[in-house]
Image (cartoon, rainbow, N blue to C red; front, side):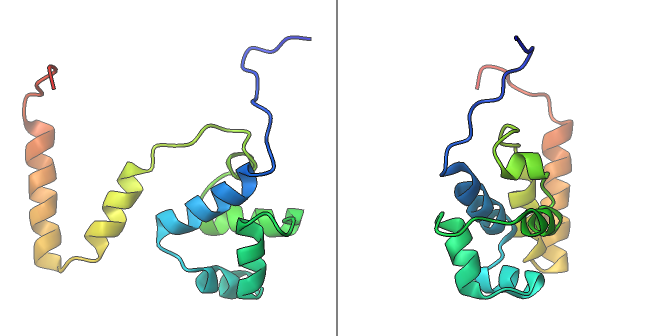
Length: 118
């Protein structure tokens, strides 16, 4: 049997690494996630270190919390480009005046002709 886009096998480190990556990308602590899911912080730590399996219910809740698909969390989809998420998170910590300046600079960059040699 052949498929057009084979899925790479998921090793035992994929799920823990993706759970940790998704949490850190959003700036959440393990305590934040534990509170949101009604679990202990040690349970979240155990998920992220492969010491405890994540139930279907828990992975579904984590998917919603992190804004990622279950398929991505379990390693069946490639890693998305989250640079925009990181930029948004960094800008959200700025004052309104500084956010306005960042927005103006981003608009300036978007409108500028791009040098394709760099």
